[in-house]
Length: 308
Image 1 (tube, rainbow, N blue to C red):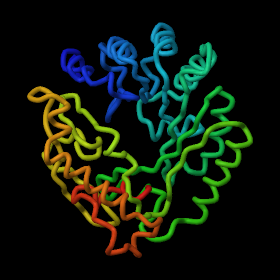
Image 2 (spheres, one colour):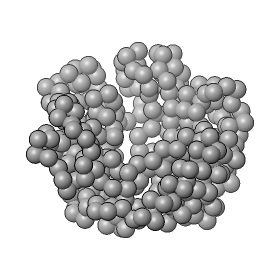
Image 3 (cartoon, one colour):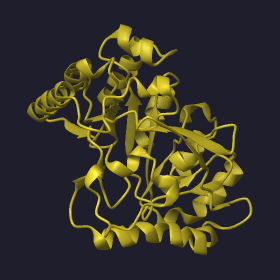
């Protein structure tokens, strides 16, 4: 993202609680990242990012420790073999050394240091080992999300969640890891392996927004993925889906307040307000009540809307 565009976005930062400087790529590739972090902090925001750790040298580590409230490292496996097979181009040893350097360099409670470990059929057996590894590295939190964007049939084969009933073996592995995390004093975050009706999407479009590197404003990154085509391809419970990107305006043309307050964007958010008002408790997706207002069309085939 161009720094001049970022500064325009920063005009709303005094109204914002938290800024996460990452969308669908590696934030440390941006040479303006340190200045972006400074701007956000000076505006009173908490600031965080997710990184593969490759570009963190000693100087960058010192800066991040002083200025971030949260840093999350992407780990593909508890072993070198699994990690480097899943996170192609990433060095397992270097990543662990960067995490350890950050945890040892902390001078207080911030930043929170987390590991995100995206669950697949290939690596879920290492989840408990990841928790123990996080403890050894001085990490505060382990997050175990699903592969929640499924662009094609090949990716569909590796997910651990189900559109029917979840695999009991996978559930046991998550329960075991969660138990170990509790014993070790590590915060453990997980998602459901069973699709459930929920009034609010996990991205919470009532309280958050995604702004692309071009300045386009969308409810979340899943509705404006950096694809070459205008449509986004998804696999949803075995079905091939193509949806239009959901972009409500560009900050190169309008202010954020104008875009956020536009009739179209307000109507999108009203879908979720009506759902919250009608909510009577979780049910699986095969037992949906006709009383529950529908999701926006672009969200009906997104796993994030079903607790995945």
